[in-house]
Length: 448
Image 1 (spheres, rainbow, N blue to C red):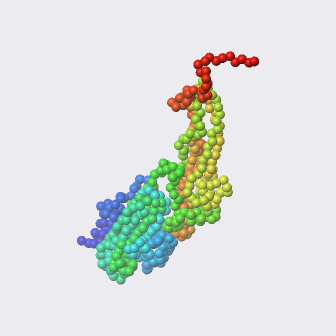
Image 2 (image 1 turned 135 degrees about the horizontal axis):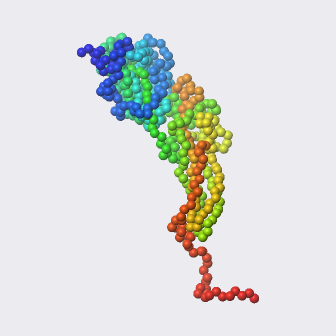
């Protein structure tokens, strides 16, 4: 059987320049063998995810030889900084053999210190994420025929998902000391449910040391892209149990206080971008405001009573952020928040009202109130966005505060007395007893 025809039949592509028939995607029966065990992409309500430099073309580099420089937006090993030097190798599209001329990244060593990773911006915890990419066995001149004849292994992992073990297509035609063209499989997928905001996506070689030519022969990855199905809005979370704030510097998770120090340093240092799908106005559950007034008389009563609303704001940012705000001068981050939301919340609200009650005999009167509030969910990010994404600060936070667009609700209530209130109204008038003469009629009160 002709090997090239077999590859075409299962969607593998040997090199750029072959006929269009060789660019077919994997049939379902074949593709499922490489899909994540948890399932494929959720199509309903899916949204694109902005994978930074998913085509690996930045920074630009000349073709003709492998490039060992850092890949913009990605990190290798540690998530701090722009990545481990020489952590991966890059092949230009003219050299990678990719059918669409895509730049490819070569994974090197089977160690955590060489995992190739990026945080997926705009993805929330609980989102269903499907990552799509292309893979091929190594093409380096150092790759021996034996090292790629059975394919090369690697893993892909998203925070919250299982580690998915993968093996590239085999390449039985590789020649030693000659640059190969690879055997590309396009449209590989991996699906996971994010366990954190901005989940970390990681590719790691699993080629053992005897077969990786000292880190110069590893599997290739190209054209990484992703979509997500965001989680539904959870409106059951009380204002006293808001999710914690989180901070990132590039791909690195950092203490919240560090991001606050950065953003609060100058008015224009950061910009606030609300997550509008997860920000909303709402009314609190009704609460009894003040005392219950009970009419034990035989006549209707008319009275006035004051009704006072007070509301505080909730958030977990350090005090240096000035959010929630105070009655003093607004902080730099408070200005950033106001500009991003086009609001100026009253962080500590108070309002006084007066209502008139008309209370019938044997009735009780009381006031219930519902305060209007707003839940604001969003990100503070560096402004302007730096040219190097690995130097961008991002701070996620949730604030709950009195709403500016909702008026408070006052419910004036009257109703029948409860059994205990009726007993109280029927109780004897409290008075001291007469010590003697309990059964003697009252005498005459004479003055002399």
